[in-house]
Figure (tube, helix red, strand yellow):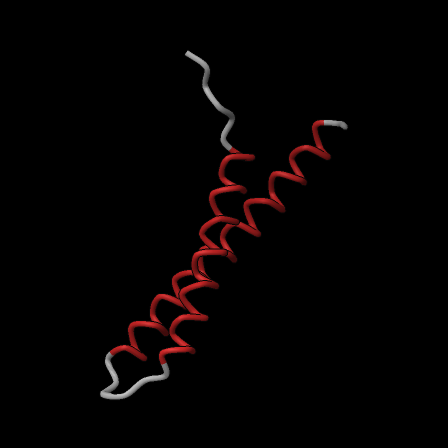
Length: 72
């Protein structure tokens, strides 16, 4: 892999990371808006929270790929 290919891969990972963070924020806002209603669908909230956790796991995975571990 050349330096350009590595930079392109890193740029793609950063773009994907930002998309995941935006979706995570949007889900958080949507969940809070639904919870503010007098009545809400518990199953819908549960599914949204599960999706939010999956997004968080993917965000953490991408971040760990982008930020190398420092061994002290």
